[in-house]
Image 1 (cartoon, rainbow, N blue to C red):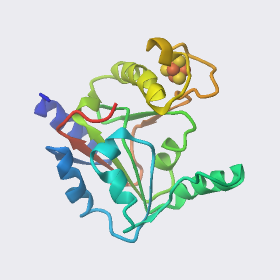
Image 2: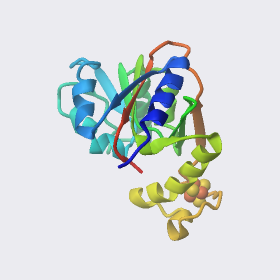
Image 3: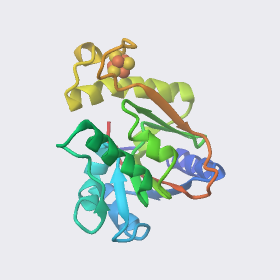
Image 4: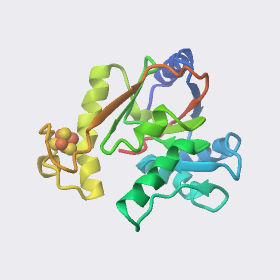
Length: 206
Ligand code: SF4
Protein backbone atom coordinates (compact mmCIF):
# COMPACT_ATOMS: atom_id res chain seq x y z
CA UNK A 1 0.00 0.00 0.00
CA UNK A 2 0.98 3.62 -0.51
CA UNK A 3 1.75 5.42 2.71
CA UNK A 4 3.19 8.68 3.94
CA UNK A 5 6.62 8.06 5.48
CA UNK A 6 6.62 11.61 6.87
CA UNK A 7 3.50 10.73 8.85
CA UNK A 8 5.11 7.49 10.05
CA UNK A 9 8.22 9.39 11.19
CA UNK A 10 6.11 12.02 12.96
CA UNK A 11 4.18 9.23 14.73
CA UNK A 12 7.41 7.53 15.79
CA UNK A 13 8.86 10.80 17.09
CA UNK A 14 5.72 11.40 19.15
CA UNK A 15 5.63 7.80 20.42
CA UNK A 16 9.17 8.37 21.71
CA UNK A 17 8.15 11.58 23.49
CA UNK A 18 5.57 9.51 25.39
CA UNK A 19 8.29 7.01 26.42
CA UNK A 20 7.09 4.27 24.10
CA UNK A 21 9.74 2.48 22.00
CA UNK A 22 8.89 2.66 18.28
CA UNK A 23 10.37 0.70 15.39
CA UNK A 24 9.50 0.75 11.71
CA UNK A 25 9.90 -2.23 9.38
CA UNK A 26 8.97 -2.32 5.70
CA UNK A 27 7.17 -5.66 5.47
CA UNK A 28 5.37 -8.19 7.63
CA UNK A 29 8.25 -10.61 7.02
CA UNK A 30 10.56 -8.17 8.82
CA UNK A 31 8.62 -8.32 12.10
CA UNK A 32 9.82 -11.68 13.44
CA UNK A 33 13.56 -11.06 12.85
CA UNK A 34 13.24 -7.84 14.82
CA UNK A 35 11.23 -9.45 17.62
CA UNK A 36 13.80 -12.23 17.91
CA UNK A 37 16.35 -9.61 18.94
CA UNK A 38 14.01 -8.28 21.65
CA UNK A 39 12.42 -11.41 23.17
CA UNK A 40 14.47 -14.31 24.55
CA UNK A 41 13.49 -17.93 24.10
CA UNK A 42 12.22 -19.39 27.36
CA UNK A 43 10.32 -16.25 28.34
CA UNK A 44 6.76 -16.53 29.60
CA UNK A 45 4.60 -14.96 26.89
CA UNK A 46 0.96 -14.34 26.10
CA UNK A 47 -1.05 -12.40 23.56
CA UNK A 48 -4.37 -10.77 22.93
CA UNK A 49 -6.45 -11.79 19.94
CA UNK A 50 -5.14 -10.12 16.79
CA UNK A 51 -5.36 -10.63 13.04
CA UNK A 52 -2.07 -8.76 12.67
CA UNK A 53 -0.20 -11.18 14.95
CA UNK A 54 -1.42 -13.99 12.70
CA UNK A 55 -0.41 -12.24 9.48
CA UNK A 56 3.08 -11.46 10.75
CA UNK A 57 3.75 -14.98 12.07
CA UNK A 58 4.02 -13.75 15.66
CA UNK A 59 1.08 -15.83 16.82
CA UNK A 60 2.61 -19.07 15.50
CA UNK A 61 6.03 -18.13 16.88
CA UNK A 62 4.64 -17.62 20.38
CA UNK A 63 3.03 -21.07 20.21
CA UNK A 64 6.01 -22.81 18.60
CA UNK A 65 7.35 -24.32 21.81
CA UNK A 66 10.34 -22.04 22.37
CA UNK A 67 8.43 -20.07 25.02
CA UNK A 68 6.36 -20.76 28.08
CA UNK A 69 3.17 -19.79 26.25
CA UNK A 70 0.16 -18.94 28.40
CA UNK A 71 -2.68 -20.36 26.35
CA UNK A 72 -6.33 -19.67 27.15
CA UNK A 73 -8.00 -22.83 28.44
CA UNK A 74 -10.54 -24.42 26.10
CA UNK A 75 -11.81 -26.82 28.76
CA UNK A 76 -12.17 -26.71 32.51
CA UNK A 77 -14.30 -24.80 34.96
CA UNK A 78 -15.02 -21.09 34.62
CA UNK A 79 -12.68 -20.46 37.54
CA UNK A 80 -9.87 -22.41 35.88
CA UNK A 81 -10.37 -20.48 32.64
CA UNK A 82 -10.38 -17.16 34.50
CA UNK A 83 -7.25 -18.09 36.46
CA UNK A 84 -5.47 -18.99 33.22
CA UNK A 85 -6.28 -15.58 31.74
CA UNK A 86 -5.18 -13.86 34.94
CA UNK A 87 -1.74 -15.44 34.52
CA UNK A 88 -1.20 -13.01 31.64
CA UNK A 89 -0.35 -10.35 34.21
CA UNK A 90 2.78 -12.36 35.08
CA UNK A 91 4.00 -12.83 31.51
CA UNK A 92 7.45 -11.45 30.70
CA UNK A 93 6.22 -10.25 27.34
CA UNK A 94 2.68 -9.58 26.13
CA UNK A 95 1.73 -9.11 22.48
CA UNK A 96 -1.19 -7.41 20.77
CA UNK A 97 -2.00 -4.95 18.02
CA UNK A 98 -3.76 -1.58 18.19
CA UNK A 99 -7.09 -0.41 16.88
CA UNK A 100 -5.56 2.96 16.09
CA UNK A 101 -2.33 4.87 16.63
CA UNK A 102 -2.72 8.63 16.61
CA UNK A 103 0.12 10.55 14.96
CA UNK A 104 0.55 12.51 18.21
CA UNK A 105 1.77 9.23 19.76
CA UNK A 106 -1.33 8.03 21.63
CA UNK A 107 -2.36 4.39 21.21
CA UNK A 108 -6.03 3.41 21.17
CA UNK A 109 -7.52 -0.01 21.84
CA UNK A 110 -11.11 -1.07 22.36
CA UNK A 111 -11.91 -4.33 24.09
CA UNK A 112 -14.83 -6.50 25.06
CA UNK A 113 -13.81 -8.76 27.95
CA UNK A 114 -10.78 -6.46 28.46
CA UNK A 115 -8.41 -9.42 28.76
CA UNK A 116 -6.38 -7.89 25.93
CA UNK A 117 -6.06 -4.33 27.21
CA UNK A 118 -5.64 -5.16 30.91
CA UNK A 119 -2.13 -6.74 30.62
CA UNK A 120 -1.22 -4.03 28.13
CA UNK A 121 -1.84 -1.44 30.81
CA UNK A 122 -0.25 -3.23 33.76
CA UNK A 123 1.64 -6.41 34.57
CA UNK A 124 4.07 -7.74 31.97
CA UNK A 125 7.47 -6.03 31.96
CA UNK A 126 7.44 -5.85 28.17
CA UNK A 127 4.53 -5.18 25.83
CA UNK A 128 4.80 -5.46 22.04
CA UNK A 129 2.26 -3.76 19.81
CA UNK A 130 2.50 -4.71 16.13
CA UNK A 131 0.47 -2.60 13.71
CA UNK A 132 0.30 -1.86 10.01
CA UNK A 133 0.64 1.78 8.99
CA UNK A 134 -3.04 1.67 8.02
CA UNK A 135 -3.75 1.99 11.76
CA UNK A 136 -2.21 5.49 11.91
CA UNK A 137 -4.75 8.32 12.17
CA UNK A 138 -4.43 12.02 12.87
CA UNK A 139 -6.95 12.72 15.62
CA UNK A 140 -8.83 11.04 18.45
CA UNK A 141 -12.02 11.60 16.46
CA UNK A 142 -10.52 9.60 13.59
CA UNK A 143 -9.36 6.94 16.05
CA UNK A 144 -12.85 6.58 17.49
CA UNK A 145 -14.33 6.45 14.00
CA UNK A 146 -11.87 3.71 13.11
CA UNK A 147 -12.84 1.73 16.21
CA UNK A 148 -16.51 1.91 15.28
CA UNK A 149 -15.74 0.99 11.67
CA UNK A 150 -13.78 -2.16 12.53
CA UNK A 151 -15.85 -3.36 15.50
CA UNK A 152 -18.65 -4.78 13.33
CA UNK A 153 -16.06 -6.54 11.14
CA UNK A 154 -14.38 -8.03 14.20
CA UNK A 155 -17.72 -9.15 15.66
CA UNK A 156 -18.57 -10.83 12.36
CA UNK A 157 -15.14 -12.50 12.12
CA UNK A 158 -15.41 -13.91 15.64
CA UNK A 159 -18.95 -15.14 15.01
CA UNK A 160 -20.78 -12.80 17.39
CA UNK A 161 -24.42 -11.92 16.85
CA UNK A 162 -24.25 -8.25 17.92
CA UNK A 163 -26.60 -5.95 15.98
CA UNK A 164 -23.72 -4.33 14.05
CA UNK A 165 -23.01 -7.65 12.33
CA UNK A 166 -26.29 -7.25 10.45
CA UNK A 167 -25.79 -3.77 9.03
CA UNK A 168 -22.18 -2.73 9.78
CA UNK A 169 -23.35 0.15 12.00
CA UNK A 170 -22.90 0.66 15.75
CA UNK A 171 -26.07 0.60 17.84
CA UNK A 172 -24.32 1.28 21.16
CA UNK A 173 -25.74 -2.09 22.03
CA UNK A 174 -26.37 -3.90 25.31
CA UNK A 175 -25.71 -7.27 23.72
CA UNK A 176 -24.01 -9.87 25.91
CA UNK A 177 -21.27 -10.23 23.26
CA UNK A 178 -20.62 -6.47 22.96
CA UNK A 179 -17.02 -6.01 21.79
CA UNK A 180 -16.77 -2.32 22.68
CA UNK A 181 -16.80 -2.28 26.47
CA UNK A 182 -13.47 -0.67 27.35
CA UNK A 183 -11.72 2.17 25.52
CA UNK A 184 -8.06 2.15 26.52
CA UNK A 185 -5.86 5.06 25.50
CA UNK A 186 -2.14 4.87 26.22
CA UNK A 187 -1.04 8.46 26.71
CA UNK A 188 2.39 7.85 28.25
CA UNK A 189 4.49 5.06 29.69
CA UNK A 190 5.79 5.91 33.14
CA UNK A 191 8.29 3.07 32.66
CA UNK A 192 10.44 4.13 29.68
CA UNK A 193 10.41 1.65 26.78
CA UNK A 194 8.05 -0.81 28.48
CA UNK A 195 5.81 -0.66 25.42
CA UNK A 196 7.42 -1.38 22.05
CA UNK A 197 5.46 -0.35 18.96
CA UNK A 198 6.41 -2.01 15.69
CA UNK A 199 4.92 -0.16 12.73
CA UNK A 200 4.86 -2.15 9.51
CA UNK A 201 4.77 -0.50 6.08
CA UNK A 202 1.85 -2.61 4.91
CA UNK A 203 -1.88 -2.80 5.42
CA UNK A 204 -2.42 -5.31 8.21
CA UNK A 205 -5.21 -6.37 10.51
CA UNK A 206 -8.76 -5.12 10.61
S1 SF4 B 1 -21.34 -1.28 20.69
FE1 SF4 B 1 -22.36 -3.15 19.99
S2 SF4 B 1 -23.30 -2.56 18.03
FE2 SF4 B 1 -21.75 -1.03 18.47
S3 SF4 B 1 -19.96 -1.74 17.36
FE3 SF4 B 1 -19.81 -2.44 19.51
S4 SF4 B 1 -20.64 -4.51 19.49
FE4 SF4 B 1 -21.31 -3.48 17.58
